[in-house]
Image (tube, rainbow, N blue to C red; front, side, top):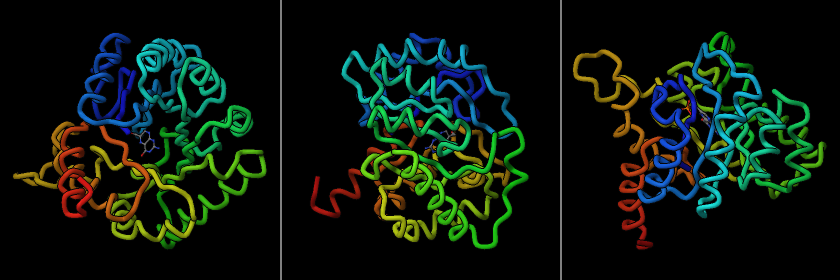
Length: 264
Ligand code: PMM
């Protein structure tokens, strides 16, 4: 899954694809490099970010979703708002990626259930403004897994079908650097949820010191080698998908892995 952020303020690609035409061109490039799904989002979830209103979110994403879907791309919409999800599905998106796992908008479960669309429910403890203050866990893996389990139960009760669900432990969302590393090391423990897993480690700040020559954090666009290494670990842990900004390095890493498995 490749990221198409149509935002002026994303931490990872800082507004480069804010213009709809630029975002569409970027989407085509990501497909050419090997992406299977394009994840189009209009709200930055970087720690401390302010939220766009719904009209602005729709204005950002709808032309991009429409254009990419009509060109045959498999499009997912990265949104916490049920009305944005519904409009994107109408415009040709085939998957909803909700970083709040249905917590931010009580109508999300109904929209997803009615559309029978695949739905990514990520682990989330509140909006980006103050999420890092919520990074308090006994055992991060056990706690995140339990909270995801509770979300899954609530979503099933609200009518979402089990076959539609994909879960995501939410790297970087209300997690400290150490907690992100621990989740990555123990990822197979999420298998117990019995659902496909998506993981988004790409360019996240816990990777910022990997490969730094002076001990200072590397900027997001210099974290792609570290991201590709995490993609291999995630694939070996059996995930359904990885969400990345730069596709090429991960595609090459997956090809290496496939060759060791005799599947390339
Ligand atoms: N991370 C971001 C945005 N959306 N969705 C899922 N399912 N998992 C993630 O880890 C995730 C996400 C934040 O990264 P970005 O601002 O670069 O898109």
